[in-house]
Image (cartoon, rainbow, N blue to C red; front, side, top):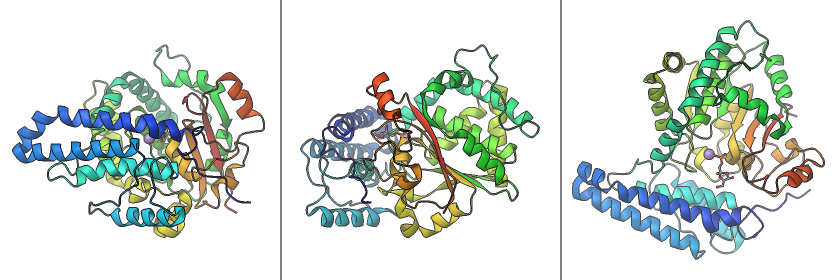
Amino acid sequence: MANPRALSAKYEEDFAYPTVKDRLPIILTRVIDHVYRLKSTITDQHSEAGLEDLKFICAALSRLKSEIQTDKPFRPLEDVMEDTGLWNEHFRETEKEEGRPPSWFKSPWLYVECYFYRKIMESFHLSTHLKTFDPFQAQKQQAYLASRQAISSLGSYLTDVCLWGNKCDLSISAGAENPQTTNPVKQLTNLKPNLLCDEGDQVWQHLRDNNSDIQHIDIVLDNAGFELFGDLCFAEYLLCSGLASTVHLHAKAMPWFVSDVTEGDFHWTLDQLSKDESPKLQKLAERWRRHLADGSWKFCIHQFWTLPYDFVKMKTSFPQLYEEFSRGKIIFFKGDLNYRKLFGDLKWQPTTSFKEALRGFAPTAVCTLRSVKCDLAVGLDEGVAETTTAKDKNWMVSGDWAVIQVCSTLS
Ligand SMILES: O=P(O)(O)OC[C@@]1(O)O[C@H](CO)[C@@H](O)[C@@H]1O
Ligand SMILES: [Mn+2]
């Protein structure tokens, strides 16, 4: 059967429409304000040349904003980066398919939104002194600091889980006695009814059944802050329980979708943990640095995650990456954007099977841990979408609902 249509801002009923119309210009305005506010710091560091950079970047971003608002055609990228050629090739292919240059309110949402972040980075790449500047860094760091309490309680819990990790059954019960209201473990029980599809048992089954020849496990990260800390706790658990020989953590090669983890964010997070007042967090940071040093954890950066590609393209565009994944036991994909890329950002019926919607992307077992933040869902039982709509008409974009879904059969 033919695939469904792509999500796109050309349909006003798609979440892509308010994203392109309102959210992207707001994000740009914030970046421009933020860069302007750094004027004195930048000129202190780089004098007049820094000021020139700043003017250049703000002009480029303002132009981008006006181009979005007036649905101007995309322009090929002009920076010289590892991925520039691939972006421009994608531009030409889309132009050929659509019979006109791609544009904000006409082209597939996945391409549009990825191009938006890539264009922001282009303006920095083209500057002289701010080529590696992260315009979202302050926001990400603030988000981490705001969730420090939750990080601390999860960190304490993890220390106990890891202590018992080798002894206990995998379905170790959550420490429900902990009285802290910010305890994320306790919160899990409250959130359980909001799991629209929970294939967690299948995930554990897969992890246990395939343990004779312990392989590595991949986690494709999403956001920095509390989410990253939770992912690192999970990586710690997979390792200390013996379910994984090593854990590969995959992050973005450049600032992406505001909050996504870059290498800089990852190291900043470890530094924060090292200097935290909680000795448990300090110890975790020490342990995690040891994992990185002895190869138990591998921190991986690949340009694939910041390209506008559907994951189906991985096998042909980056066969080596696909092959590396195929040697692992399971891949955990975190978050909404990875979900969109897994299923091609197409308007699937929510009852379409997870496997069918993957369209052959099966390097190894694939698990998605995703809170629903856009109008794309697959693998739901008959009636779930309808009953959830009756409870919360914004369920697809509120972020209050989530899915744990897995495909562990490769054939
Ligand atoms: O991948 P993440 O961090 O979970 O979410 C990314 C996200 O903010 O970007 C898209 C819209 O801008 C949405 O699909 C989604 O909510
Ligand atoms: Mn993200």
